[in-house]
Length: 158
Image (tube, rainbow, N blue to C red; front, side, top):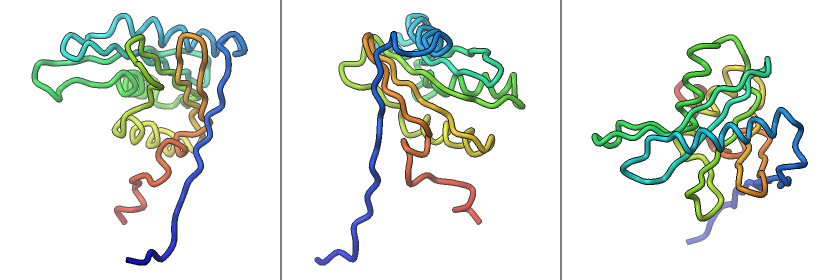
């Protein structure tokens, strides 16, 4: 079989030491870490914390919430994002930080979380930075579109 063309997308993560971040961003990452230790993850034993930075500097935390009636639980990212938008619908989301003390490799948002993050980026017409936090470093992506380059969008439904 011959192919017509190849489509590709370059993914770029910028890596920082935690101590290189500004104080507000350090606090955002620490909040995500703290939230992970409050997760209700009794079935998977995989704790995840997230923290959302709003345009006014307020930080909203969330963590994964599991339920015996799988898949009734919710990821940390969506817990924080849904709460932030429900309570502060007119405030833009500037960034989200994600952390798991249980991740053996680089933890990235699941597909459902990427889609929700992209929806909020689209609603507000402004990029949301993503901070993937480890114990020593932070991996930063400047836009959710970089996580989900071939997204499902409202434009596809028209």
